Amino acid sequence: MYFLLLLLWMIFNGRVTLEVFLFGVVICGWLYWFISKHMGYNYKDEIRFAKKIPLYLKYAVVLVWEIFKANVDVIKIILSPKMEIEPCVVTFHTDLESEAARVALANSITLTPGTYTAGLENGEFVVQALDRSKFGEGLDDSVFVKQLRRLEGRK
View 1 (cartoon, rainbow, N blue to C red):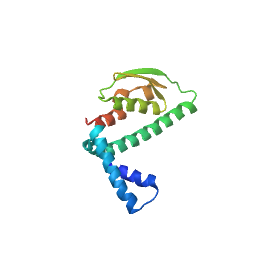
View 2 (cartoon, one colour):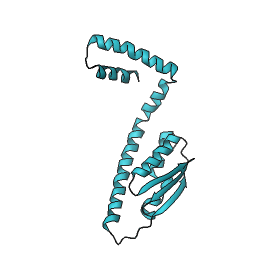
View 3 (tube, one colour):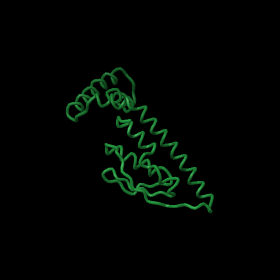
View 4 (cartoon, rainbow, N blue to C red):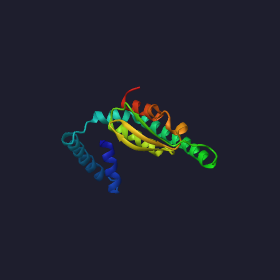
């Protein structure tokens, strides 16, 4: 956090001189101390987050891949008018512990074409799906849920 503050100081200042750098070291040091003492910041949280960066990157890659696959499925449905689709509303419960993980799951489902999260309350999801067989099955144990469990520290 300290180095990020110092980098922002140097970028926003616009000049790179020894005087500006030393003044930034002092200002950022004071700001880091203030954040740590009065705002409940803990460097251990930063270390825990840094260790999870590969998991966040993997989640982003999985999300992009699932969006791509769902786009292909939706295009197939659009381009084949004789294909029978069965729109549905799926309700499922997840065991994700944190509210942030649940919201990330809801947003991931909504970002994926063919599905829309209509409701989320106490871990209970209501999802509208374009087709039951392609989009409506397996949401409670999807690849998103598995990745979010790993981010929470569970397998």
